[in-house]
Image 1 (cartoon, rainbow, N blue to C red):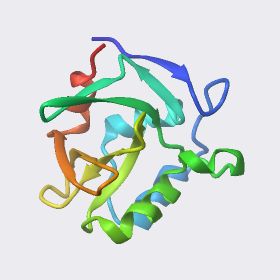
Image 2: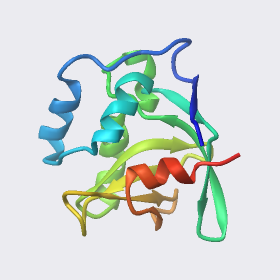
Image 3: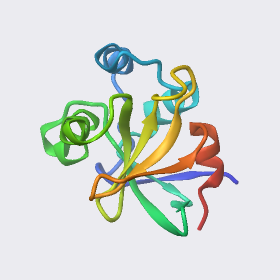
Image 4: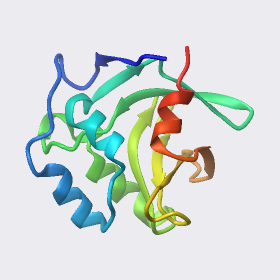
Length: 144
């Protein structure tokens, strides 16, 4: 299924500045998946369409991909701020990249597969639920 992207944080696409993803990788000591790098470089702060992902017996709506750019007006959607919020409550190796409509986070999970992270959902209660085995599979599972 083809994914289209709709503005959410900003009124138009807001490409990631050169070098910003490399800085994030150094801060987190990870290598981000290539497909994620390609998507977020152009579509940070945007909503995928379709935007529903199945989680366990229910589903969740992806509100927006978190922003890499440092922009005071979009701090509520900052990937760094989301990580700082989750860090004291989640295991080492779990890093957010998207926000759901109910305030939960879609995250990379590097705990078991440091070279190819799985994708998990972190609930507001800080429970962790598996979503996909890779970022590519996560995109493939999006539906209406």
